[in-house]
Amino acid sequence: MSQVLDGSNHSLQNPADFRDEFSYKPVPPTAVVGLALALFSFIALFGIIGLGIAVTGIVVSLVSLWNIKRSAGELGGKMVATLGVALSTFFLVSGVAYQSYVYANEVPEGYHRLNFSSDISAKGFVTRDGVQAVNPDVLELDKKNVFLKGYMYPTRDTKDLKSFILVKDNGQCCFGGQPDVKDMILVEMQGDKRADFYAGLVSVAGEFLAEAPTTAGELRPVYQLKGDHFEQARTAY
Image (cartoon, rainbow, N blue to C red):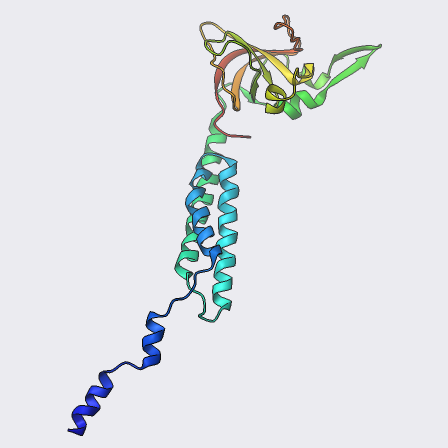
């Protein structure tokens, strides 16, 4: 009889073990935030902002894992934090690889990439015998086939534009009033090519002229581009 009772006693769980099995362990908010950032970091495939989100997700999730480890079992959510690190890392690596590939292949064959701000606008003008002239560095680009990015200066027309003004940043096209002459390029689309207005960053390619032979309404740009290629920019840099 005692053996039966002893056997039944062994089948019962220790009350402390029972409480441990069903006790609730709080999950740190950083683990949840890290996972949310990880899920949202898929946009790293489409822009530099997404890369920043992915990096933030990794940091937040790692901090969460560190806090969970230090809690000596008082905090749960290790799986959530680990998943946050893994997803953020995956999208960060994938985003860098994909955007690097796009950047390396976005320039049409036969064109040379330029940075509007540093290669043209920042050069400014030089003064010779009291007369302003185009910077010699920019003059070297005259009649060269170039590829660059900028923002379209808004006008009343938005469709099938034969020509438009390209400015170096969206502050000038949207909030800065009339841009400085060195900060804009008159783009003249060639042949039957046309462009539709787009408020974001655009890419253009064509023959660069260091001195524009025409004006565009009240705007008088110094530079001109004979546009052969136009599209929404594939990368932000």
